[in-house]
Image (tube, rainbow, N blue to C red; front, side):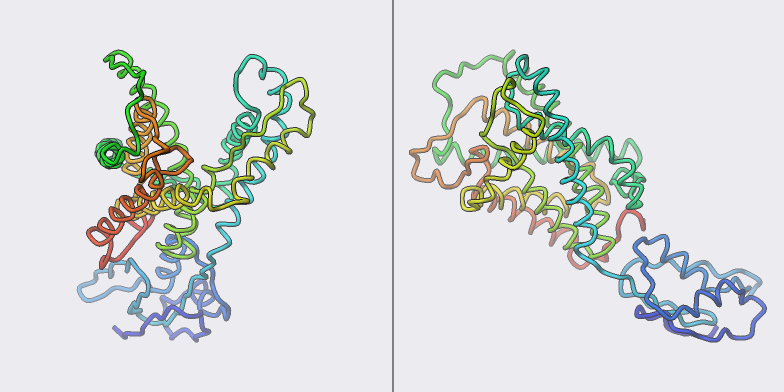
Length: 389
């Protein structure tokens, strides 16, 4: 068998060697003199197989297809030399997701007006919650079309391509790990007197169990939505174009930012106009006008996002991510129910104003865990997405 190296650069025009097995489709593929955009592993594999004639080897057996696993890649072909280079665009998938979220929030702000006027007097919630919840509803309703457009409408791209038993096991392991991690953080805050037990708190098994069940249910819903979006769809979209670290960093920046889309600005339902939702939406971004007020919590949330992305990259699915996220939310809600922040403490700068738990101490802890996890599970190993497994 003649050995010809497949280099990942450009598809170059090559004359096919005289052979009965060389068909016109293969020749057409090899005579394209322009870069080829291959954003999915399946398309790349199809191109490689098209370049390998189905000929019988010694003993009359057909050679097995070659399966690429990582970049860069060199493949020995029977007759042809093909060069394929995937385009890498860091901003294109990110722009799609940002524009989609922005459009959903705008539509949500418009539909928030009639809902707020009708139900605002009955529900004791500020108008910005109607705006953000409306945006989430629109994003959810439009997600099937959005994911189909980006070719993400499959379980593997969303991080769910595992057996039910393995998925549940990974989720439970992640839940236990998330509880332990957050208990370490909360324990340190209590030991440093940054948070103290509420003076009026009275221990009760019934109240504790009810609060824990409520926090567990809410945390699971939050984790399911956020992990499917950020570590599922967006992680896959960015990784296809830009690689692991871009997929870990870029979605984590957006993940941290959306936690600060809220405002104290409000107006009563009887004063709301059809455009009031848009005004409230504009106020939701007021915290970004002074980044120093949110920097500590923003960095902690960003580190958490990167850690979750590394878990997704290592496991190939988001089950453990959902478990970790749920465990964090569970402990945070219980902590806020039992303890309170002491603003007069000498080390109060270790927590941020976002929830008085995440801050610089959380940043150090989660960053250290992410670094250890990376060196133990990812570094030095060829990375493959779940789609290529």
